[in-house]
Image 1 (cartoon, rainbow, N blue to C red):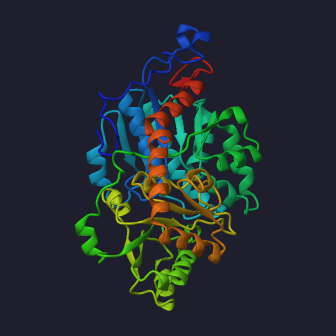
Image 2: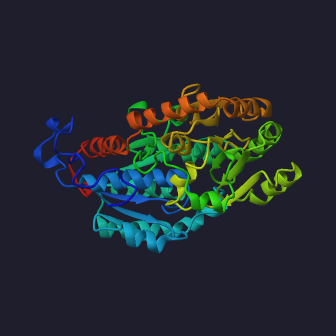
Image 3: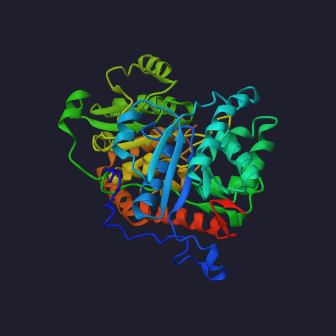
Length: 434
């Protein structure tokens, strides 16, 4: 069992198969009942150990399903750094990972012919696995492939939506047409937040086919601990009050605004230090900005942090800051798992009042939401938490309590299992729709 899961297989309450206790089973003939574990073929542009909240989201959902005995999952994805060790550790007969795909560089039409190879890889896996249902974790080309394959074979598909794939494709001329056909053609769509659900409704997906499954967090793995001495020494943080940002260095994460806000308040707090964990295309620009603002001794760029050390990173800080914002090109934070992970470590958070972060952060309770485009509002929130130790303690405690009571991965896996059951119980079928 993975170290990421909160329970062993034996400790978990089993999730029944679709033919056992399913709400709609009583209306089906015996031939229509799904009594064996659901066979899922999951298509994803990338998968763990690739950094990114959505990849962790998928990993935890499917590991919980497999551990409960409710599903057997085959994942078709690409190779990423560290994949060999990850696959060797986490693969099993019921959880198999095939890394054959190559991602598209963009969503432009000129890239679509490159989806031919993933299409044939998908067909090959269907012939081998004979899945009951296909799940697509990304819109292009995985969603398009699932749509085509479903029309050819009759195998239903379930789409995931995280928000930004809708808001970003809004800015293309023809992409919305294909996008909408993919989402509307799905037997079900899993939305990661209310924000995402609203956009799915906007593009014409029926409400009865949308299931909101927000990210969860492993409250055993992410928990309050004393700061790790090795990390304190590595980043030279002894005696400092640490503000932390965890996330890819891309514009929507708001690192530039966060640096500017920190620069405006750091003179008031000589012991404050800003630790930025993550890598991405904005790294050089952000390091240059840090020097321009005179923060080279007050800001540390930690680079990409391993999945294993992430819980210890959160325990270094007093405040977790992610100034997420809605970019002009439509890029937006669909939810923000880092807010929950920081809360699980009993840390208060500051987030942007946009996208799914509105749902991830209980404003005024587990943290503060701000207009991340307003540097003064962002600086004010940072100042408020740095000056008020009791407020930090109270919000951190509330965040931990909320994570424990509302964001359990097993409950989310149950919701995904119910989605599978609804899809499979729509008509009698055995691997392929008759």
